[in-house]
Image 1 (spheres, rainbow, N blue to C red):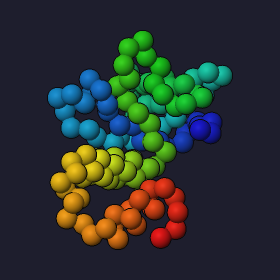
Image 2 (image 1 turned 45 degrees about the vertical axis):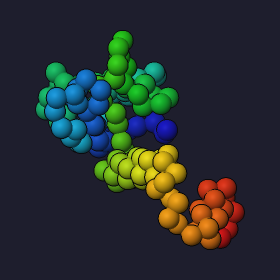
Image 3 (image 1 turned 180 degrees about the vertical axis):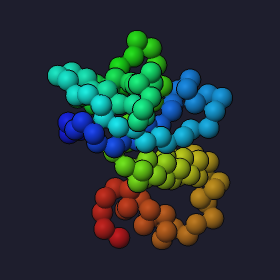
Length: 120
């Protein structure tokens, strides 16, 4: 990940225990400080909620489990949600062989080629 710039707008998503009893909400945050190891983000005008993140991987600095994840754009988060949903769908479909037995052999061969990376 590249180094954030002071004043840059990022998006924070509550995860882990912070999302246990509440809905996950993507919140715009501003990069307030950038140091050698960490950078600080927070909502505009609310310094008491500032959070430190590691510069090398943008994970929250915490002694325990992280309570937020950063995204560069809203689209990045939407793409991740779509990827997770698609992966769950594929996994559950192929986990139970009965779900795909109704497909013709040609389609199953095409799926195998796609997964292996060959052109169909």
